[in-house]
Length: 111
Image (cartoon, rainbow, N blue to C red; front, side, top):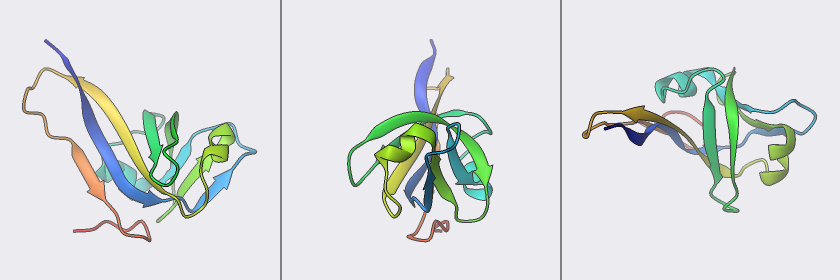
């Protein structure tokens, strides 16, 4: 049997920018994305901690500290909002452990 599980997430990242005039996606610091196991163009669920808004989009890699919501979803966040970025996948392992990356207010990895 296959289970749909949380594969990886970035927890409490701060939105650093939003760009409505863009085709879509969320731009994520490449180091953070890779550490969380988020692939380029992978579908993610984004939850805004301040508003409760949730939306699906896809990942593109950006520069250090960057979390930029692009396209129509930019209407659902404000700069400075905390977001949780999650990717899901299928596994046959009952004891699967996701890659969880917790960040500080400057989107630097907490140890």
